[in-house]
Image 1 (tube, rainbow, N blue to C red):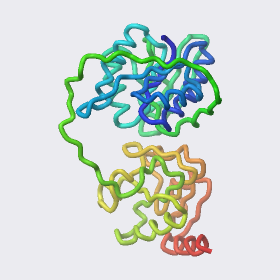
Image 2 (image 1 turned 180 degrees about the vertical axis):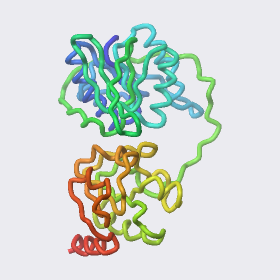
Image 3 (image 1 turned 180 degrees about the horizontal axis):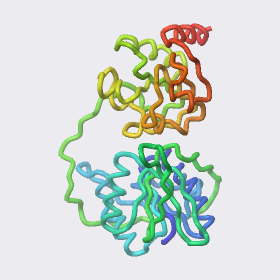
Image 4 (image 1 turned 120 degrees about the vertical axis):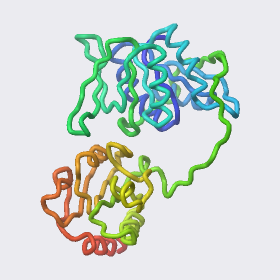
Length: 315
């Protein structure tokens, strides 16, 4: 069973991991495996998208979370020692990855944004941002398995090949987890998950007062996008929820279009959207750092520019 493993959390991110996992398994000549909570229909989907085998984990009880799968995954990893384990860099995924890495005594590259295989040294080379996004750090794991968490949208989803064959294997249950869920409470969100949005309108300190955020929201609505913000807007002014904050300590996003309104463009913020396909900005300071990152820029007062943009887009 050794090879490249993917720990599946949700379909979209698993398909993205199948893209890079498939490329690496082809290059290394190893098998590509997915560990999935009980869902045989989705298992067949993953096989068509490149998995050679899908391991079905036993069903969870109501008082268990995905953490209950950690002992089972650890047992399998200790027995078969895969070359690489990939896990989505979600809140739950990062927590699972750290605990698995500690238990099997191996290295972990968190928030890995690029992954290649070095033939000369027979090792995986992983890249991640360092120093607040000002540098790229290359990491080579000297132990086996290597582990990495991959942020959403780092890779395109894998393509399906209808009729592709693979194995679906049921794994036995492991000893019950000592962690129990006592209660679940739904967290109310102000908007959709900005990491899933294809178009983002982001407000910065150039917005003078809380009431003016409505102007940016109106532009986002006209563009069928979502509203986001810089760290000061959420943390210092509390004008928007922290879940809408983009940056090194906030959300990492890769929209088709990022439009910054009154955003200065400090590196801690730019790091959060640097992989956007198109970056645009409106700022009255022609020397604002955001223009160095932008594909398109308008030097002007957002209170003059944004209403004109809205008017044109409504035509």
